[in-house]
Image (cartoon, rainbow, N blue to C red; front, side, top):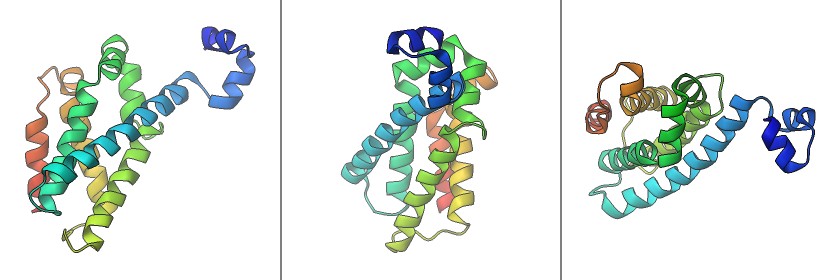
Length: 162
């Protein structure tokens, strides 16, 4: 934060007033990247889904997980600072998780309203579970030491939606 404030020609106090602490700033940066990933995942699902319901959601979800898992700046951050990164990306105290849940809830509600998807549980609850599943499988190597398995996460979500 000291270097960033200096580079911007600000005092550290001003920078902290503007963005909060380092983790809040990192969360905002991660969210800006996440938003771009959601747009890309939506375009991918539009181009590759065989239907506008469950298949579309699973393709959208899978592509977003791939984008997240493969994006080199995020990977470097998680590898360099796993505890901080997982807090920023997966904690209820950060901005990333709440906004991602809200975005996914909106997508689920959009698909349900278009009569392309029949939700058996509340869209908010389902979005929360889907986000937690994605986090668990994307960052599995840092949580349990096991290899990430994005296809398994997608299979579980398909079961939840079917």
